Length: 222
Image 1 (cartoon, one colour):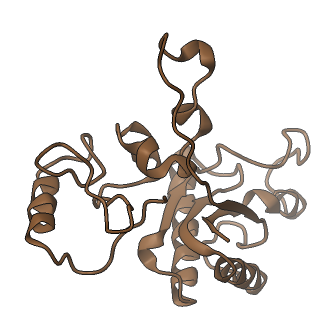
Image 2 (spheres, rainbow, N blue to C red):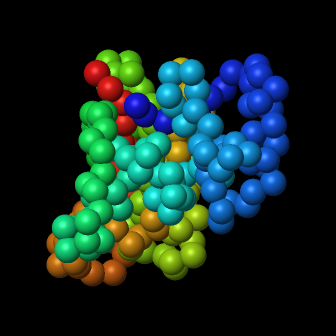
């Protein structure tokens, strides 16, 4: 059963106590609500309760990550190669996984901008339509830039681009607490190193358009 961020008010005294204990924990410790027995708090339908520190990367480091969010974590985290497993250790229990839909929004932004282009908005409308076709759990939006500019500048720009996508999706009805954003700067271009050679020019900038993007992943169950 998939873990979800719960937006309704906590109704029981036991859950209030558990949440209070979780607030005393730091992001480096646990990203799931833990009860006084050290167990993960789950909803009536078996969904793990996440703290405000939850991100996919942090969940991969939490001891309960594979129990709660197996389908959001890299395969090697929850299913290491047989040689890496301890002798006699049981294989992880199978868990239903949701459908992942990757959308490469390669025309979202102009050069050096974080403002959505009209074409980018149409692409995001397609994402919203896809999200309505599934029981949506999480949207992960990862911003990218082209190679021009410093690492620090491009990191900030990529984060602004991911935030612009989140703002648009939320404006179209997707819950804000289901959308997680991250920036990768210029570290993950999709153009090849020799594909757009030369100094900054209109021709080279146009060639690098696919790198100015936000990769969007929808995770849910049909």
